[in-house]
Length: 407
Image (tube, rainbow, N blue to C red; front, side):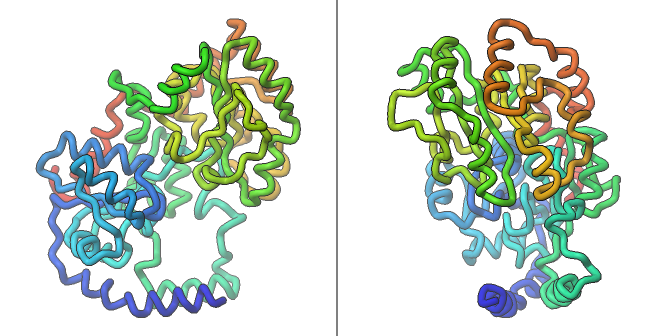
C-alpha cells in the first residue's frame, strides 16, 4: 500500500511533464532506445541500436538507462547515452520521433512519449503465453482491481502500454504477438529479431569468458542449460532436485565437455542452487558479469538444454542439437503459464527428458554422433523463423523508417 501511495504521488508530480511533451516538436531523425526497464544494455534493443549507429549516419541514436555504470561504459565507446530521468534524457525523448523498447514503456522515458511512434521489439519468441494472453498475471477488467486500474490509467495515461508496431519472427508468432499486445495483425511485422543476426553473421563477437575457459580447460563440447523463469523463485531450486554433481562431473570429464548454466535474466545474480564445493569443475554457473546475454553464447554451444524458453526458437537458426528438460511441465502449466501450443507439438526438435539422468543419456547419444532429430529441427526452423540470415536489423530499420516518415 505504501508503495502504491508513493507511486501515485510521483506520478502526480510528473504528470505536467507528460502534457508538456505534447507541445515539443519531434525530429524524425532522433530515435531513443532502451531495454529491461532501463536496467541493462542488452537484447534486441542493443543490437538494433548498434546497427543504426553503424549503418544509419543520418539517425541520431540515443540510449537511455537508469544505471550510471551503463552510461560510463557506453560513453567509453563513443555512444550517446543518458540517464532516463535526467533533464537531457527527458528533453531528447520529447524530441525523438521514435522510441524503441524490448520490454515496455519503462525501457525509455515514459513521460516523454506522448506523440512518439513506439516500436516494440520484445525479448523472445514466446512459447508460453505473455501479457494480455497470460491469465495468471492479467487483472480481470470487470473486477474491483480492474476498475481501479482503469481509473489509474485515466489519471496517468503515460502508464498505458500502446505500441504502433510490434515485430515477430514468423507468421505463427505474428498471431501471438497481435493477441498479446492487443494490436491488429497489420501492426505486427515479420522481420526476425535483431539479436539473432549475431547467430548468422560471419563476424561473430568473441566472449571473454569462453576465451579464458579454452585457455584453462580442455573443451571439445559445450553444453548449455538455459531454463525459463518461474513465478515462484523456489521452483527454480527444484529444477536441480535430480542433479547429481559427481555423476555429471564424471560424464563431462569423460567427454571433454563442460556444462554452462545460465539462468533467466531475472535470476542471473541469484545464489547457485547446486553445490560445486569450490573445486576445479566442468560445471560453470554464469552470472551477468561473465555473460550478459544468451544469444552470443549460443554460437559456442554444441547442445542446448532448455525447457520452455524462447531461446529454443533462436537456437533453431543454428541447426544444432537440443535436449528438452520439462521436469515440471504439469506444475508449470497449472501455476505459471499456459502455452500457445501443446508442448508435445512445439518441442519436437529434440528428446524430452524427465530428470537429469535422462538429460545426461540424451546428451551422450548426441556426443556419440547419434543425432536423431535433424529433420524435426528443419521443420521447426521453417515454422518458427521466416528468415534465416543476418538481415533482421536491416528489416527492422526499414520498418522504423516507415513509421517516422523516412521511407
